[in-house]
Length: 309
Ligand SMILES: NC(=O)c1ccc[n+]([C@@H]2O[C@H](COP(=O)([O-])OP(=O)(O)OC[C@H]3O[C@@H](n4cnc5c(N)ncnc54)[C@H](OP(=O)(O)O)[C@@H]3O)[C@@H](O)[C@H]2O)c1
Image (cartoon, rainbow, N blue to C red; front, side, top):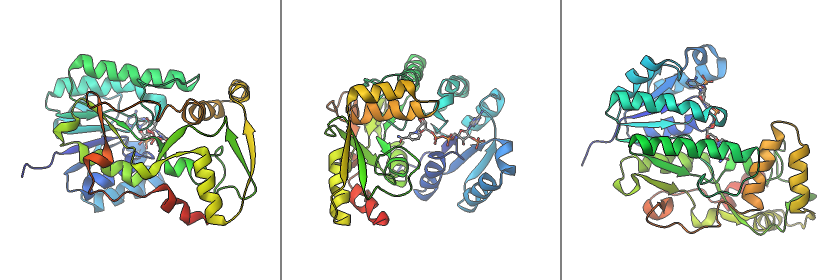
């Protein structure tokens, strides 16, 4: 059997980055985490870095804005995964420069982990962020760097604790629920550990080179109406539904402060335009993860919601 690729995670201390580091180590890859020196002295991140070390992960100090540190880190691995925050996606040009100089990378996974940014009907401000992620795609392709783009749909930890209501809630509603539009467009929800497992599974898979991996397992595709019905069944109660029209959602986005307007515009793309499911996956540009890796036992939305009952 071919040896497993060595993996570098940039953005290792971030929300999704830590799951990627943990999955890479767990799946037997030699794993490297690029961390900024400042993270080590942070109490929470410092603990996380210690837990990485305990799992056999090699810590590399570096910064996106320190070219030499990036080249040095990239030269030690076969695969680079970026989990940089959405505000910094354009800074990934620095990673591309380092990959070009190092010349040894077999696969690059840019920081996407959401919608397919080439297939979106988003409004501002999400529209600009998706356009930036698409710009990074075009730069990767122009450089001829082998890549995989990861479509994850919604992170379960972000969306399900409040049943896809606006953030702030720690439990799904038990009285009233807001339904955007008619509540019928299907969205995708995946738990972070599964996102990380599928992402790591794909790095050595020739079927996904220069393709998008769509993490869209069949039991995790639900409309807002489906989600509410699932929850109502669990708590054996019918909730009051408050419908907000598309027109009103657009107005609310325009009036909302930063960063609420960003979150609301993402929700518009997910729950009103149905951007996570309004196209077919063609083998020419992508594959669905649970079909490629049927051995992964993913957490279903139904199972995930049980913890809140
Ligand atoms: N689908 C969804 O529901 C969903 C939800 C959230 C995010 N996302 C996407 O997931 C991706 C990652 O977002 P996230 O929220 O996980 O990010 P995050 O928690 O903000 O983490 C960002 C990481 O980047 C690191 N970083 C920042 N500046 C750096 C620099 N100059 N050099 C090196 N590292 C630097 C941070 O390191 P420090 O620890 O040193 O600061 C941190 O590890 C984004 O593309 C985002 O759009 C998707």
